[in-house]
Length: 248
Length: 205
Image 1 (cartoon, rainbow over the protein chains, first blue to last red):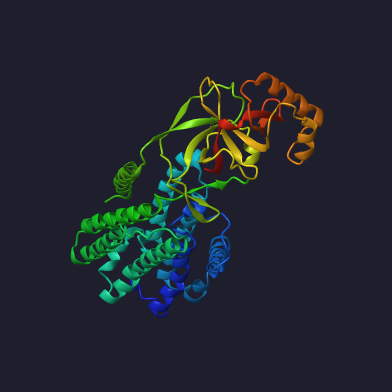
Image 2 (image 1 turned 90 degrees about the vertical axis):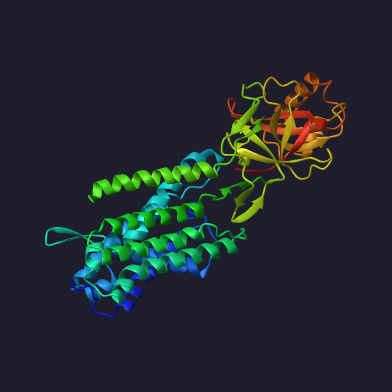
């Protein structure tokens, strides 16, 4: 199966991943995901967030997608968009599930929501970036790993590694930006999980290409998923509790 | 590998790791005093164990506030709900260095004299009275009528009753405070010796 898109893959990736990156980074502030629905001072980034959210809403409810118009005849992009739609649903769950004002009275619920948030965030990120994870062709279930042997190394990097790497890099940058703008001490002890996650993911792809048996690919893929979850959890587990000042 | 088996294996490992991380990062439980926001006669525990510990920093309107310098109390009762202090919340209290430094109209933590259980209570500060002897309660009402929500006659009756009941304790300067009676659904006013004032509530979570 030819996975090469009809327009330049990098442009297509940018088109797709511009939304994706906002989705993963800016629209889900990693430092304090529980405070998303609280009022924040106006910034340009808020405007971009809203635009992105509206675009995603349009895509979900009206099945409108700019790139679909250009690439409607290309099977790969249809698959991509289907997975992207699915990841959008997960994204909305991620966004609204943890949207709870935290205080000591609901700290129990908050912990549970944090776990749920991390689980679906990592799931969403992988499905959105590792598109074609589960793919049914001619009635046979095929996984992305099966297709990896059929494409060149350059395309492999562009299609499978580039989106995840970009999303994770932007996640890290977003974490640094939000932490510093909040005046919180910047600790990047969890960044080792960033490195581990990407290395293990590369291993998963490499094993799938080199060996006929996909078990090693799946093994490393699960490990990278775990590393990603731990990375995210480490960044939010110390979320500050919202307090109220008592006026005199 | 079948997707179901994959899901089960992944889910189990992930759950284990997440629980492990949360357990390792879980703060040490801390025991704090209970402050009653309600009737002093309502039963409650003397102390409360906060299993998630006490935060060092809290987020107030987007600002990071260091609350490590405050004394923490566990709120019991809803009588301070009007002032955004609710049952089962954590109150961060700044101790009063001198009994004369009460400024504005803060929510005060007062020591309960001869407590049955909890040793502290929360009251909204209205004003200071120099001495309850020869106090003209009508003047007190007139001066503070912006902060008193009940009719003058009721106010005077409450103050006179309290002053005569606790005459021995109310020596020197006296605090006039307000609380909300949840059962009667009305504001009540009472008098407390200034020496019983412990601190002012600054933040709650």
